[in-house]
Length: 344
Image (cartoon, rainbow, N blue to C red; front, side):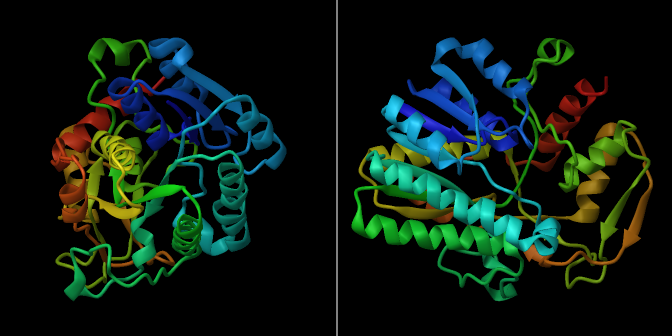
C-alpha cells in the first residue's frame, strides 16, 4: 500500500507518519513545501525507515506536479495534513486561507478522482463547531456546524466537498476533527533528544498555548499573554480539550483501518472528553519546568470560543482507537523535554 501524506514535514503529519510506518506496511510519499514544515522531521523518518519514505518538495495544490506524481506512482490513499491553521491569522487573511485550505484541496481531490484513489483521511478541526451551546458540551459530531473564523469555515467547506464527492465516486473518507494537539513523541529517549533526534513540535512562530508557555520556560520568550479572562468559564479563561500527539497519530491509523475494513465515509472527533483552562495549563507548565515566567493579561483574540471539549464516543465505538496518554502532566512533560532539546 502506498500513501500520500501532504504536509507531513510538520508537527502532526510527522508524528502520524512515524506511527503509520511503525504500525502498517505502507510506503509513504510525503509532499511538503516546507513553508511551515521542517526537513529535520523528514530526515528522522528516512533515517528510521529508509526507502519506505520518499520526500517531494512541492505545493499540494500544484496541479502539474500532482499530475506527474500520480502518473508515476499508484497511490492507494491520501492522508491530508497540509493547511494554514492559525485562527487569528485567518481572520486577517481570509482569502489566503480559502485559497490554501479549499482551492488547493480541490486540486488534490481532482487528482485523487482521476487516478482512482480509494481512501482520503482529512485533518479537520473542532473550529467547525464555532461557539457551541454549553448544553452541547462535550460536543458530538452531529452538533451544528457554525464556525466563527475563516479557518474553521475553510475546513467545513472541505468536509462538505468530501461528502459530495463520496456520493458519486468510489472514494471513501474520514474527516478527523482535531481538538487541541500538544506534547511530543513518547518514543523520545534522553539519548535521542541529546543527539537532536527527537520528534516533537517545531515551530517558526508558535501560537499554540503549551508550545508558547514552554518557550517561556526555557528562556526563548520573556513572557506570554492570556487573551481574555472574562469568558463564561470557571476562571474566566478559555477551556480546551488537549490531546497528546501520539494519541492523535494513532487515530489516523485507526481511521485507515476503518476504511480498509469497508467502513463508510465518516466524521470523528479526536479528543479526550474533558478540558483544561488556559490558566490551568500555564500552571502545569510552571510546575513541571520549575520556572515562574511572567504572564500578562490581554484582550480577547478574534475568533476564540470560550470552550471546546470533544465527545470521543463515536470514534471509540466505530474504530479500535483507545487513548493512552490522557493526562495533562504527561502531555506537558513530553513537550518540555523536547523543547529543552531544541535550546541550542
